[in-house]
Length: 268
Image 1 (tube, one colour):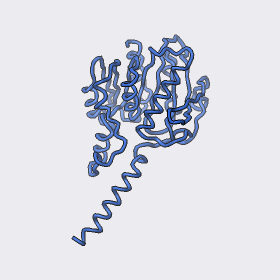
Image 2 (image 1 turned 135 degrees about the vertical axis):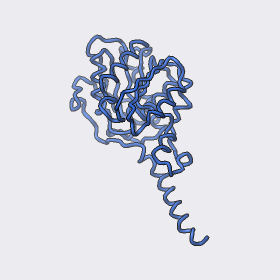
Image 3 (image 1 turned 120 degrees about the vertical axis):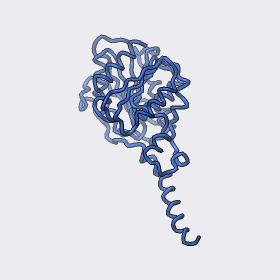
Image 4 (image 1 turned 180 degrees about the vertical axis):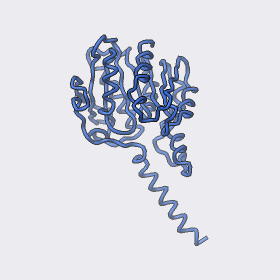
């Protein structure tokens, strides 16, 4: 028994390190504050808005460039980078008559604060509230687009404020499921602090749903995305892009993704 004590001590130290450092394994912010022109959006309007807990976040508003449809898409980013990396998708949506709000969560792109599940939910509410104060924005034509972790943020907000359409790219059923997939030897269900339980929330959504995923995704397996899709109510549609991995261009801003988004929005 005495010989086991050092082993137990090491295990406890490892688990403690994971508990306190786990958000560093989930969130990968780029701390630089991007300029829209540097990412091909010289006509995007820089903006700021405040969260309910007193943080000021930055973003860009890109108006529809041609044939305005009256719809505005809020892009809820994944767990890495900043809004500049979503500029290509925003430009393509604007070219098809959709206005776009790009913004960064707390702790990203020079924003104050540290990311967490509760914090990102507050940031999402603040982004929507900003659109509510913006002249010319029709709140009955707001569309949520969430990618990966941002899909979980969008699902949560959609329960509070149902959008005209809910579009999820590479969504997971829960962070617990994805954590267990990538770290099978760890007691993820006991340790995880930010759980993002979309599987519990999506049966309650009332908005038309589109899910886009790649069948070669090594971060969010297609099987897990399909679990989420099956739990969602109608109307819903699943678009699978053959050969696409999680961060491939086809899934980030490719023609199949853009076409599916526009078809869902204009058909909603």
